[in-house]
Image 1: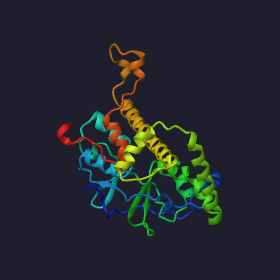
Image 2: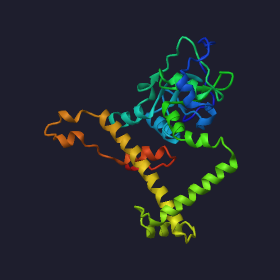
Image 3: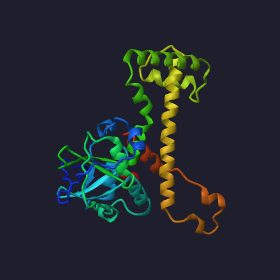
Length: 286
């Protein structure tokens, strides 16, 4: 199975009754945010006997989140994208997930985290754990998973979230002034993507626009998107390279070879998968 609609939360573990101990600075950092603020995707799950390729596809389809390993509706463990990408390089995609899964070992008590749980509590919980399981309000079924990266992505948008708390008319006025200033600066800005290239693809998409500032704004957004993908792909390449045999022991390896990271199509495909883009090669060509 590539996903599971019904995963039971640990039922034999006593539930914690005391509140989560959250440092004051952590609580202030996350303010009024809750788990619902993260806009999490539904949980991805596979069975222990599923091939690694199934788990890898599920992780890519869920923006690189970790995949739960479930058998008979019971949680057995999980695998994350790092495990999967490393095994794709060192092992076989046909190997069973049980061979690389991280076993789930519950704590002495089970703390319920649901959609209304404050993010400060989740951040404190993740200081000593890799994954937080999100359940329904009754704590019976697992609905989502949270990793530190989810909190980091949310934190990147915190300033905008705080500004939204203010008066809506004032906020709209600030946005209008900011957009006017951005458009003014774009008059003298030369994007890496030439205006002619932007014009060509806008015309192909049926988008009619004579304002060169708007075209350059779209080009700038495209540059940022490509830059983010390249950065993510490089991180996947680093993971794959570090998981491989040590290059320092290869005969004739120069200092440059030992520090070089080679970006492959598989790295790019993994990065694009986090944005919902499937660029993997067909199995016929593997």
